[in-house]
Length: 301
Ligand SMILES: [Zn+2]
Image (cartoon, rainbow, N blue to C red; front, side, top):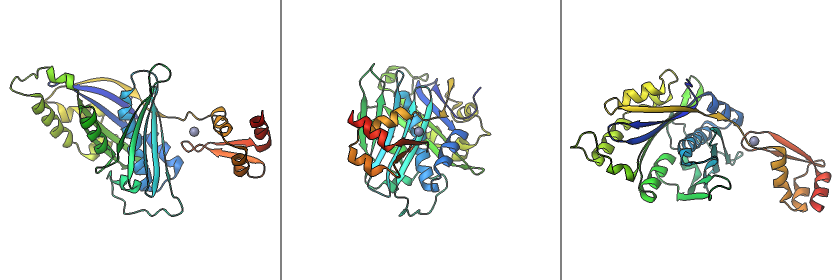
């Protein structure tokens, strides 16, 4: 069984409340160390990656789920995407020269403040099969999870609770999160205890979820199933198959070339250094090199 870097669906048997748990270790560490970000930016990027993977359940078919925050603060953008195959990536863009790192709070998810006035967009792209879906909300609240919870409750009428922890465990980045959701259609399902309403069920589940400690979410020594049992044993937990999450990038030479082809000859001239154009992928730091002249010829054709 996969013990780390996975996402798993579960259900509380007493109330039909649905849940997802995510645990990220080495794959997250590898994404973040490749970027060499200050700790606060790494934290914010990890928060985005973790939340993106949690929400990627919105993909019903093969496709890509993207979560992106853009703002006017020190951090201009932080973005992550997750494919239906469980490939994750993420990056942030910020003013490297002028960046002032505030006090680092261990395991705190408060770095959305670096985005200033910002909005959060999530996009479900399932290729030709279905329409592209995009939701945009103002980024407010204490952290990104709170903002997403608010969105689901207000816009989708889906009760949503997210409990997340990001932090370093023995010097290496880790993340863990649990999301609970109660769909409106599940309100009709009778609670096992006839005296309970679905509001009661939801409140109880939220209290149990809130009791989860950061250390429990992050510790590689506590298995996810054991954690779920520890939290929800009175409710009865049914767990489904784990899905592996691994880091990866979809950039390639052709794709980058395609972007360059959309640019004007002036822009190409401007970007060239010693007759060469170098483009580095923001997600994975891979550099693609093009000959300026051969490229200009391609554009002219
Ligand atoms: Zn890449």
